[in-house]
Picture 1 (cartoon, rainbow, N blue to C red):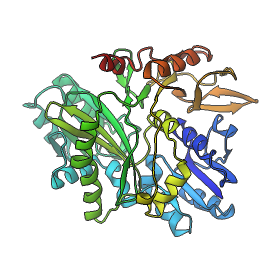
Picture 2 (picture 1 turned 90 degrees about the vertical axis):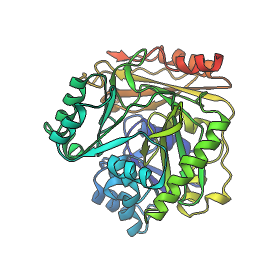
Picture 3 (picture 1 turned 90 degrees about the horizontal axis):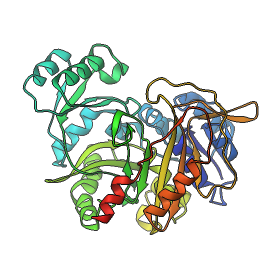
Length: 422
């Protein structure tokens, strides 16, 4: 079978590597891919948002199956167009991808169907939002309605920070149209958990839980990023909590989307906060998380392509999905300065004998060498029977990789290890 994966980051590299394990796949393409993915798939210079180019390529190559992973093409309707061209896909249709593409939609969905989440208000103009902030409790969370590369959420500690966030989104249009509407919601406290779920719109299968590390600096300081590292499983997510989340959050969400005439098929990501009042939804993503995918998929024992096709065909209930009992840890090697400005074009040196997997995110091939081209450059994943061993493997490998201006957090998994000891 000829398969194509849409996207070009570390998440896509993890998916490509996992798909390669299936012997039925005779040709594997990645659009656009990157310099590292090129070692595992044929990379094609078609942007993930070039929907016409993607469909044209699928027809030219007689693609049998497509995996659409980034949020933008999903929100734009890539799956709808590919299916109309006769290409089966893994990923939600446009009308279901709105669960991530619009914070207003997702908050109102949860309110309508009694799914636990933070209290919120929506605003369509800055003046109303600023008036609301005058008497709001602090800290407070400001969210752009639309997609913003994972950076459209500001946790404001002061009223001035909150006002600046509103003005940046709604007046200065820092995130373009994504900030035309905003959500202001209460600040929740507790351990954060990410749970990715396979679903065919009826059956839902949660994957191994994970813990992301969003802040750029150690000790969870600095700006929010797309993720500086992650571990799996998350020790805060006990079997009892998992059962409650399935009953109160996961299944009600799938049923709510079906009731709205927006059945969701693909990978639905639940960003959760385990508060003193129980688990609550912080956010939904309509696709695999990044870098959560880089720890979850290495622990998947079942063939990924088999699971994906079961999702597409509505037969997930007939497909057993198993995960390894061990642990995985991913450390992101970034360009110094990320998520702000940073320099590019530095050669990357990766030893061949690392006892870890390297997923390439922001790198391209230049003159036969891999060079940096993005903020998050590599994801280095260690897998072992215990979290401590997995972290040791990831950091041991990270220390052997070289490129100028490399930066990575040295405390990934620290909170999880402390939680295990309690």
